[in-house]
Length: 336
Image (tube, rainbow, N blue to C red; front, side, top):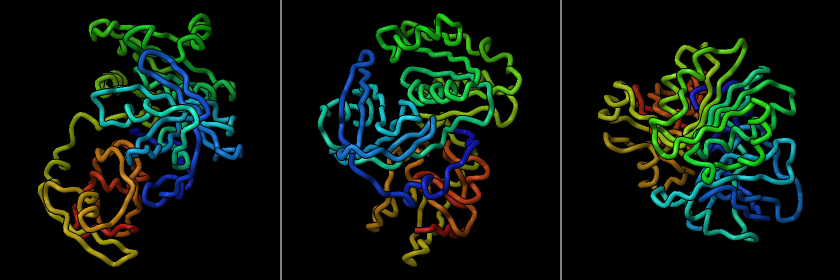
């Protein structure tokens, strides 16, 4: 999530500032591909759900207590439901396995939609998806079609059996608008991203989402694109931090909570979130690695060191991700 072009109101963009959640029921569950299921979420009373924009996600509060983020892959023009698609990963952190244990009729709590990966105000888009990274991009394609925008999709998966939405994408493939590439699990057979992204069409913006190595490859293949035209959303933290981030991790600082007047020391080796937990201060968190946006918090004073992959330069003047940020200043004051 390296750049945000359209910014929703701040109240919809913070974890601790927008901890409200509301109930939904699972109206249906469908098999999209091997180990990928779609969950149709609706209001239990039949009312419309909060509006969302293409690229948005919701926090899903699982019965186990885990909070996980899933992109809404359904049409933004349809507020009667949200559809999220989840790849079951037995070696993950438990969220996807918990989702796959749910059944139609179950009730969940979710957050209002938040969007750190919006569609830019331009008429030409290039979408690049790896695996389950197709989920936010599917919603973006719906929005682009509704707007009459031009777009091209490059969708990389292991095999047809592991390709979500394959049937509905086939007409786009036949029309030359989409390319679906299978590598059979061998990176040597991967799509030639350098060739695909060598030329930037006039006015085009690039959007990409997928596993960490895939994201790194798209990063490396698109460095020549014009500033402000690359947008991404990650499912895991970037490969490595900067030298400044690593050095800052060795320096303690104070975190001041403006609303309650409490101050705590954040020592080397611990995060703000960990210190708040130890002192019975409750905040919503999920990834704890700086890529999901759940813990976004406004800061009021101090000089933070950002190490997340969500905030752009403008956002960094107002917000921090308390799961991973540190401070250059002796004290960092939070709006908590």
